[in-house]
Length: 309
Image (cartoon, rainbow, N blue to C red; front, side, top):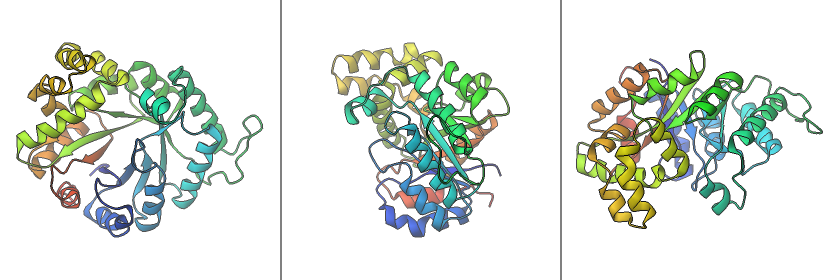
């Protein structure tokens, strides 16, 4: 079995409850625990818990925005996590979006490619213990920390291939993996968050999927990503309705076939097989994001564990 990751914390599950849950997930066969950072927990706190309670799991951020922390603070946070989990922490960074950077955090979303590139270069040197300008880490990590870039299109994928240890992508189908892998090339880790709803109630899964697709794919960076992947025409009615303020119309304009491509649903066995299709097409690290469809997210996580442990 290759890597089989899961997003933590699970939706609706208190962070402290993960003290008992994380060791169980490792025993079930999950190899990785990856955090996110939007409007829930920060990216590092859940991984501190995992470092202590699930010492076999590899830990990663997917992703930390480069605009909401300065590069020195990012280096300190990454170094602290690497000290808690030596040799098993990967730092994922990315540009994020104007909503998160500007509306929620009062920053300026300017020249995202340059900001990610410059932060990456700073972090590589700082985490190696080098002085960067007037800054040097007091406690540099004893082992190298892999850095992965959030990358949706060729420019960032090429930067990840040249200067990072891999790329993290999002909101793609199993068939899209080959397109992304072709731009990234071989020899770099490719990770992706995969939204998984383990239910045989297709209508319920599609209703959840439509809401998520409308929320994400109307953001400029994701709209451009799917334009590049060839879905511009399929998504155009949703974009028009959303731009006109017609949220219900935007949801109705999302075809069921598109939801089925981008959100994995079905029985637990069917979901696992779909995830393995991503891997067969060139994905190294699937990162499951559990969508419990009104059920128990812990039971869903248990059901989605790899069956070959």
